[in-house]
Length: 443
Image 1: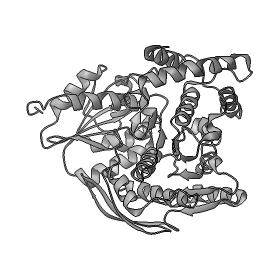
Image 2 (image 1 turned 90 degrees about the horizontal axis):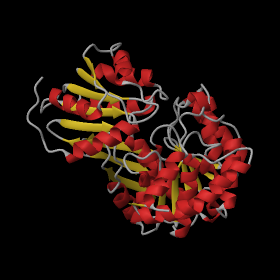
Image 3 (image 1 turned 90 degrees about the vertical axis):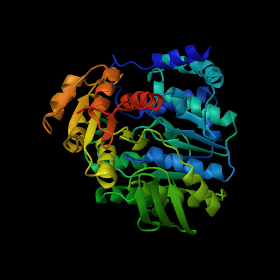
Image 4 (image 1 turned 30 degrees about the vertical axis):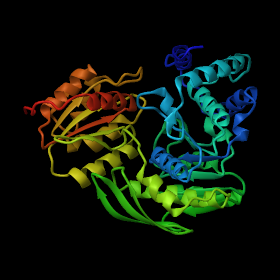
């Protein structure tokens, strides 16, 4: 199988024409059956699982970079990708090579298709991707795999691995049609990654979620390290260059710099440091120097990322209310008072009304467009929602034309924000990085 054939096969597992399968224990049973047919690669991995609503990708990337700075071979599995599918499976900061992915998908495909004979049916696109990542990490003999949970935790395909540390970043309302309509219900799903007698690191949580996590840890006799109680963080500076903070951990004090934007990153930094400290209890010791060097090297594209100046241009996958709130607060903190032009696209499967209410009032001009996805909201439909908050809206279906118009509307001292769906942000981020500076904008 060639790389192109492998990608085509994986894409064929996405069936938007079919109704979403029920969120039941069948999900995990199907994944376990697939892994069993592949020789249970997850049983040969030492891993960290990172669940949560906001910041789990950033936190996973931080943990991986710190471990790499110590000289360990580290696998990183994240989702979704911005541009290249191979971003989902990385070792030592490098995406899986095309030839390796093709070879692995060739091996995985018969195991996937054998599932057609079982009641739970074929594995999904995401399940197949996770199984492929596990196989790759085993083949590369990684010292540790840092794995971002997809949706929830309890029944997610990643929850087949037995983690050394279970990490839960801030929880808020998201995927309510699947996980439940209250913070307590969602927290119970996230807490499903906690293991008996395990180690758990949790960010500061809303009260309702915090109670659920504490109760789950007590029931499992798991040790809970809580940010704000056991590990404290002091934000020293938040600027367009990143965040400087001091983390007071259980094993030391760390003065660190992270080149990611937004005060919220201080919480992620503390969570990452606490996780690394817990790994030391499992025999994976990391020096203070590696903590500083790893955090300073973190790169997490498309998340409140500054990709240009004059005008300041921010790209951010603010696809849910928690992420959009982080973007909103960062814009007000770092670029408040400047005229803002918004280029915006969302999926119908997301809470686009709440997301729109958070970001649209900040913008003087808004251009809506349609992301490249079967579930995309049309530019006109999103524009109608935006008009509830600001009248200056232009709907342009074609993404390149929408970007050109948004840039035309943005003066050199203004701020251009491209946000919404991962599919939109990933594509237009590439356009922005490839384009040369244009003539000063007209208003």
